[in-house]
Length: 119
Image (cartoon, rainbow, N blue to C red; front, side, top):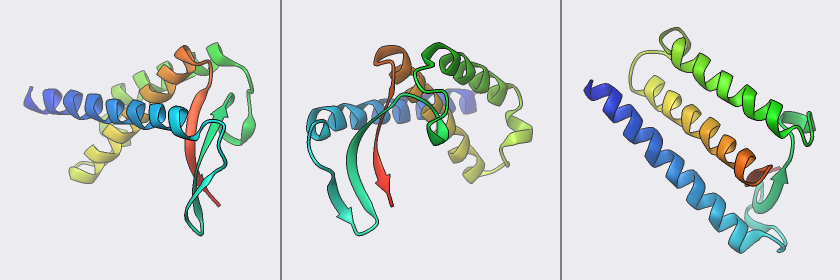
């Protein structure tokens, strides 16, 4: 039971951090040129209206349903997907928070807010 409470708390905190960073990106980066942080990394506001490699552009509901199904499947199969130990738990929590954060973006904005530009 303690592990479940810890996991929920960790995912909620990561999800809040995700939404705070995205609010910062909307407020500070939207409409401005990218900010160079390192020679290979910029902060730039991007509205991602599809998924990986630009597929399924504008398909909000199918992508939202896919995220919900993926989230449920990962929870159901978590013991076989994530390795045991601390790093497996970290990966699990980061993945859950990322899926939920992007789902919130898709349902609220109708796109996913991205800001990390590695090149």
